[in-house]
Length: 240
Ligand SMILES: NC(=O)c1ccc[n+]([C@@H]2O[C@H](COP(=O)([O-])OP(=O)(O)OC[C@H]3O[C@@H](n4cnc5c(N)ncnc54)[C@H](O)[C@@H]3O)[C@@H](O)[C@H]2O)c1
Image 1 (tube, protein in one colour):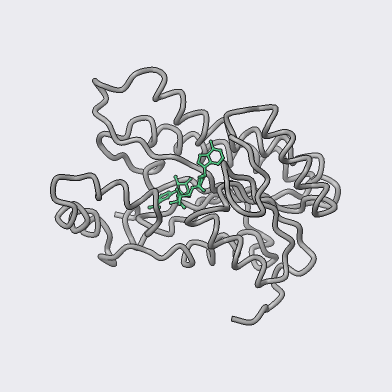
Image 2 (cartoon, helix red, strand yellow):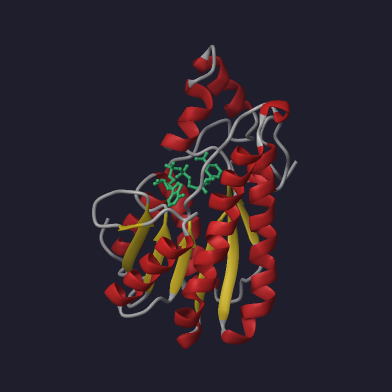
């Protein structure tokens, strides 16, 4: 696909950009003319940091801003899943999920803020349908994503005077390494995948590129009057 320039001149920081939804977003954003810096645990041409490490995250955001000459947009796509019976879930597992999925994005937003404030900008947080309607055996994940939805709304209120728009995308099932682990470890993976598909009106799993298009909309000027919103990109699950 040739570049259409919908992000020409924009400098975008993407966490979790080495895989899945973040990687598809980085690819699309570059096609659209953006400069992109990725923060992830590992990968080629990424600023390596574990988002649970405050000092490493701060260094990575500083390096990303220096590499691009500033930051006009943030996409918080890094995240981890946790499928476990609540009775068996210890504090460390709970804290790890909250640290990666909620505290991590909060920290990246705060670190990027001085850059975003220079001429206004955008933040898109990748939450989940699981942050809007519950799933069993995912108490930590659902709680972290519900928290991220509210963090985004709170920041949308507070940062609007600085011309910073903050929105959330809530994906359904998306074909990525994170998603595949949710059914590949089941006793009958094919049946588990079928049961997941059945939750969605469209009865299919999304491609990461379909999420990238929604994140592009919320990052580009096409959504110039949109802030504080949560866009479900989930083949029709949370609306019913
Ligand atoms: N795939 C789905 O079905 C689905 C559904 C709803 C929401 N989501 C959300 O979408 C986002 C992207 O998920 P994905 O499916 O593309 O997963 P993925 O595993 O393919 O990609 C996630 C990326 O985040 C990075 N990451 C994880 N922990 C990190 C940490 N501590 N520090 C820095 N980077 C870290 C990983 O290394 C990886 O590159 C996540 O927030 C996830 O919760 C995914």
